[in-house]
Image 1 (cartoon, rainbow, N blue to C red):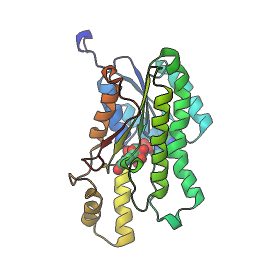
Image 2: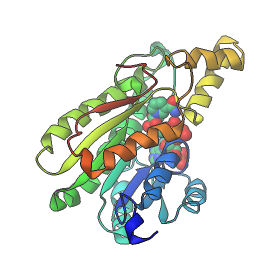
Image 3: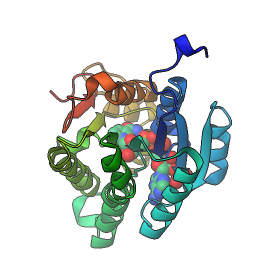
Length: 259
Ligand code: NDP
């Protein structure tokens, strides 16, 4: 790429948790296409390596985001590779649907660990450097389930609502420090999470695959699944320098489901 055509994120260091597949992989594509050096985090090194090989400048690092010590170690390694982190995308997450009375305190804890504490650990790992530079972008991939309720996902929805609370409060705390904090809130998006939800509906209700897909897609007024690239586009927009006024927001990518 010539100097004239440099990407908007040329030379920036972006970390994408859960960057090996699904929405995270699409986010990694979008950031790398604008010139960012991308660190991909996740538990499955084979998946991460395969994704990294498709990107111009990316390093895969294995890490379970629920493990505080592992997070600290892996962010230190990432910093060695590409310098301090400019963009953190907290994308790693998981959903395990179940009726409320079949959701144990351990199940709740598991949802909080990956969806809330994971982002918390990662933010605390990057923030000192961002404060030092007076600059940074923190983007949490929350969910429409951070903004409205859905039946049979109380633990997931509670964790994602908490992510939104964290986003809003931290945005205020950092408002005059050059660091923005936002959430991107997808509706049902075509990834393994949605495929698992389809399988779950089929096995629990005896519905056909087409019926299960229609059941989920009907939440979206556009009657379709969101594509991972659409979520990635919102993330990229939040990273642009010119969008520094955007902070504490929840950007729904959901075909009008939440407004
Ligand atoms: P996928 O299941 O395709 O991807 C989840 C990613 O998270 C994987 O890369 C996985 O990697 C990583 N991950 C999960 N647990 C951990 C962990 N403990 N430590 C590190 N990485 C972990 O799902 P999506 O791409 O759909 O999900 C991405 C985000 O988008 C999630 O936060 C999800 O809640 C959110 N979202 C998804 C929606 C959807 O309909 N798909 C809708 C709304 C929000 P690995 O297994 O290798 O660790």
